[in-house]
Image (cartoon, rainbow, N blue to C red; front, side):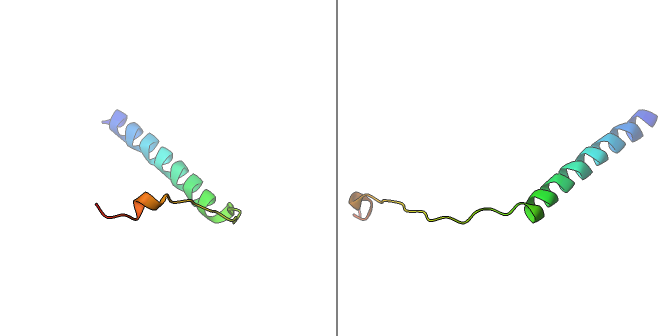
Amino acid sequence: MPSLFRFLTVVGIIAGVSYGVVFALANFVNPKPREMTVTIPPDKFLKK
């Protein structure tokens, strides 16, 4: 039974750290806005 508690503790710590990393990336990293141009070939507009 103690190994189960140790396993659940390790899994909980890993989940908490990964949640913290995702939270930090979502809130503290600002993406740079930039222009984007996509060329679509005319044959994509034709219905088949």
